[in-house]
Amino acid sequence: MLESISGPWVCFGDFIIVISDDEKAGGKLGSFSTPNYLKDMLFNLGVVDLGYSGNKFTWHNKSWGRHAIRERLDRGIASIDWRLKFPKVIIHHLGTINSDNCPILLVTNPSEDSTPRPFRLEAAWTRDPRCHGVIQRAWNKEVRGSRGYRLDRMQQSTCEAFKKWNKKEFGHTQERIKVLSFQLQEIQKEEPTEENCKVEVKLQAGMNEWLAGDELLWR
Image (tube, rainbow, N blue to C red; front, top):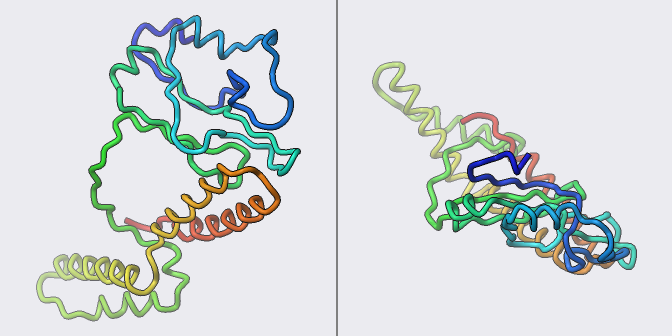
C-alpha cells in the first residue's frame, strides 16, 4: 500500500514488532535469522523512522521484576519527502494509563508559542459543595441593559468567577493532571520493580480520578 503512494506520506501507530534488540527489555531476544518485515520495509522503501521523546518503550506486559517485558512497538515512519516537509516533527511517548500500550502523539510543527485555553466548566467543580455559591454570587450581580446583554454579561461573570475560584481555592485541575502525567512517565522509565509498580498503580489511580473530573460539560 505504501509503495502505491506517489506523494509524501506518514504512518504511525502500533507495528507489533521491534526492529532491533535494544528496543526490547526482558524476555527472549530475537534472532538475526528471523524475518523482520518492518526492518525489511524500512530498508526497501527507504523510509525514515521519526524517532521519539519520552519513555523508550511503548508496551509492557504488566509484570515486574524478572518477568517484566518492555518493547518499543509503537512508532512513526515517513517517506523522505514528507520528512523534508516537516523537519521539526516530534513523536511523544505519553504515559500509559489503564493499558499495556502507551499513546503516542505526533506533532508536525512544535512551537513554544502558547494560546490561551478557552473556558471549560470542569465536571470536578460540580462535585464540590462550594460550586453552587460561585454561580449564585456571579448571577446576583446587578447588570443593566437588554435581556440578551444581561444574559451575556452574567455568563461572562460566571466564567471569570470560576477561573478565580479554581485558581485560588479549588486547585487548578489541568495543572494537577499535568504533574501526575509527568510523574507517571518518569516512573515508567524506571526498572519495573515491585516498589516502582506500586508507585505506578497509585499514580494511575490519581490520574483516573482527575481525568474523570476533567470531563467537559459545556463551553
